[in-house]
Length: 304
Image (cartoon, rainbow, N blue to C red; front, side, top):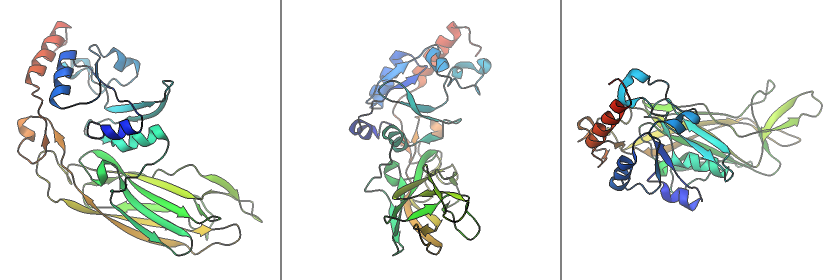
């Protein structure tokens, strides 16, 4: 969030972070790590509980870490209504800032300098594949999106599943090196189309269509406790589709597009296990913070 703060600011989005740490610790952390947005203290995890994000994997007997939230982000509009929610079960897996910005704005904003490749079938369909988020790089646990953008000539449409036998739906498969985790594609809303002469209603897309496939690197590909094994990897995108107009259908097509994607180092805390591996080491010394946290938890009767 810190590194993407200017993008949030440019989009007119305000950032606030909440933690169960005390105000003095948060102030020191913000100054040390150059955090440009407010860090809010929720000492008793009251707000965390009210929002239903108390981490239930951590039990009251688990010592000083009890009271932490699940890591994630709420996106609200100007009226305070939640319009997006991005939460994970593991602190090592987070959504890219760009994905959150897209949710707030209601559209996908692709960076001009992100890795991308295009193919034009010469019959009215252009396909562009882009790695979206983090300036087009992969980092351990940070979710990026492979965005496949179809630009369809006026009058053409492509199909979602299911389709009758003999027709081809739009499908996308993403593959990469070991350690690249690929999640299910996220398709935009489609519109119904009734085929004349057949009692069949199909789901179609037309115009500009963005299909987003979440991907991230796990510890096998990019670890926080060892140097990067390589600085770039290849991600291959296999796109299958069939374009039709109101009268005829073109033959089904397959396009294979490859992206050369850089690997980026991970932000790590200033702890011995993380240091000396070429990662981006934090400057905040957490030892005093841990002492204060232990004292505070003892004062509230927490078993340590």
